[in-house]
Image (tube, rainbow, N blue to C red; front, side):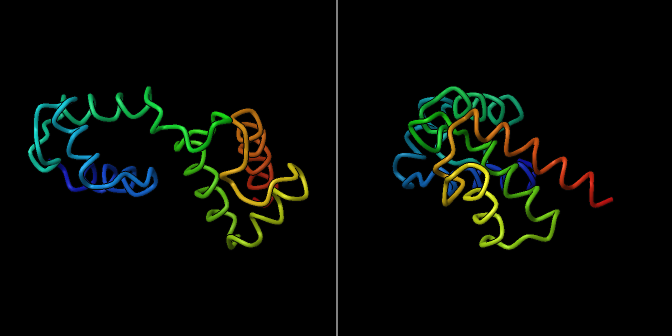
Length: 122
């Protein structure tokens, strides 16, 4: 397994706050393996597709996805914003104190707003 893909798996596992036992159960059920180190390309894709379609992929009941959350964090980092700056931005424009409180639709708008800010800084 490629080290970058292993890192992605562990980042997703951490972001989803999956306990190790639950993660291993998912690995076994979805890919038929007990360790992500033995995943092949097809197994990696199966696992990522499972997370995308599962309740685990949603950060909150409002539909915010892990991908949206990570992308918002990435854009804020690209802008050089600390977490407090990002939270102030979210509070001012979306009346939410953290990323985890955004709905899926609000996250889409926040991503577009952050992209525009980034483009404007160039």
